Length: 105
Image (cartoon, rainbow, N blue to C red; front, side, top):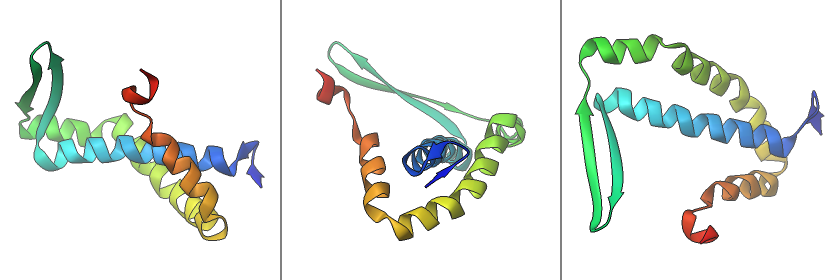
């Protein structure tokens, strides 16, 4: 089955990719901080920046966050339907997100 030329696999992929970005931004909003981990020669270093209320509100109202929320709510019922009918396809696409640098190197 396809919707406007998108296969079920592609729809699931777009949904999961969008969801991953939405979860990342939601975590930033929930914690009120941005955190990043850097690899350095002797190990890793984590840097964190606390956000003030204005910055959190800015992120909540930003078009990127609004698009992520909107797309998630529209694709979720479609993907749920696909997953109910064809759980193997959903699982296969979901597993594609497990690629790590170790798989390449």
